[in-house]
Length: 136
Figure 1 (cartoon, rainbow, N blue to C red):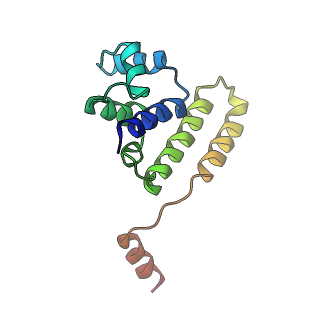
Figure 2: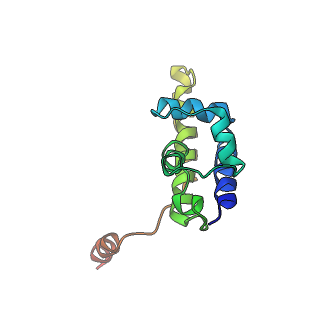
């Protein structure tokens, strides 16, 4: 993978997360990484090589798929994990909203609807064996 391609992926990861450079710098600072705006800009413009610690930080802080960041297609498992994270955030938003006792049933129904949209992953061989035993 070329320096330019890696720079483009880093920029795309930040923008996909809806973050400005300043936002990401603040998140990285919270994670213990000190970084200047100018440095990040040089990396994203392929003026300098992107260091390994920054790639690891994008994976950790933004939840970026490591395979995708390094030039491969996004893995289906990682895409599914991202979708689940998004649904969990929706549930957290519902739970954080002010509610009354009468609205609790509505809130529960709303959470159930969100969770119902999360696709079930493929079953494991152990789960398949249990189902077979239960049927037989």
